[in-house]
Image (cartoon, rainbow, N blue to C red):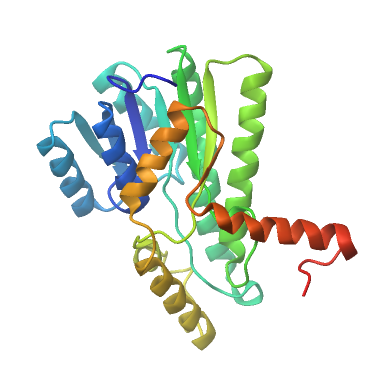
Length: 276
């Protein structure tokens, strides 16, 4: 999608973190915006900020794990702007827990948001975007979608699924010469509050009575890394560049792909998961 000025972008999880970084970058490119989030306060603040900068923006509360709410988001977008050209499936959550001790409710919650959210987004928005004879769908995965680290089982599974979803979608779109393109964002450490927000929105029935010392230490370690991570506004600029140049892969930390190569080397050398 070469032209962004005057086009309509929808960003889920758009009130903070990477989503807000994207929204700001799209606003600077002259796009009209719809930002969706569950945090009402952050949503209002984001809308006010973007409007103050001269952008046309609508905010909407949306739980991406609900197909009905994604459909309502699309309906509201068409009612407001008459069209949609860009969807960023960005909303995500993650709780560090060992695979053997993670409750099934946590598995379902994380996969519903991180994988079913993008699936619903593609299902609802792709036909609308194709009507414009140009457009793009980007989904936020993670380096965890390429290399599965310990203690993040459900998150890893969901993010691997997002990579597979977007890669298959892009191949399908090219196979039928669609005017729409797809891409996947695989960020490394970004300065966001995803860990804190995940704890805040975690369903009560999912949370065990005690998460254990190991999970707590891993969670603190992850948040410490995020606190020193890349500015989300830089990520937004990268996504704009990728969309404008029709790139598929968007890496915030390209050198981290060496971990993927290391895994492939081990696979080919002795069929181990990781060579010592």
